[in-house]
Each structure stands twice: as C-alpha cells, then as structure tokens.
Length: 87
Image (tube, rainbow, N blue to C red; front, side, top):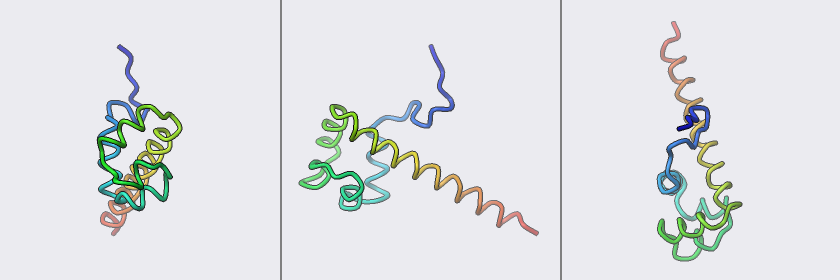
C-alpha cells in the first residue's frame, strides 16, 4: 500500500472538501469561483458530488480552492502563534 503524506488530498473525501467549502464560502460565492450549474441552481451536496465525480476539470478546481484555503488557514495559524509567542 502506497503512502502519500505530501499529498494534501490524501485520505480526504470529496464530500468533506465540498462541505468545508460550502461552510466557508456558501453556495453563491462558491458558484462565483467555479461556474457550474449544480452550484448555481438548486445547489446540494448530492447533486454537486455526482457532477464533480464525473467532471475532472470541475473537481480539480474545487480541490484547488480547498487546498488554497487550507494553506491560507495554516499560514494564519502560524502567524498567530508567532504573534502570541513574541516577547
């Protein structure tokens, strides 16, 4: 079994990614970033997952937004710790 510890998507389900992004941005803002019908008209996790699993380019966009968001949060966390630990 191969391990991918450097891959930020390793062991992260698409549903978790989508739920995180919807919680962070909401459907309307997410639809502005990735212009796909299932984000614009009657959006739901279920319909979006079906589309993203079949459409590679859309899935990659969503995954990249999630990775960027995760990296931003990690940088913020490090910056906050540095501020708190400063003399």
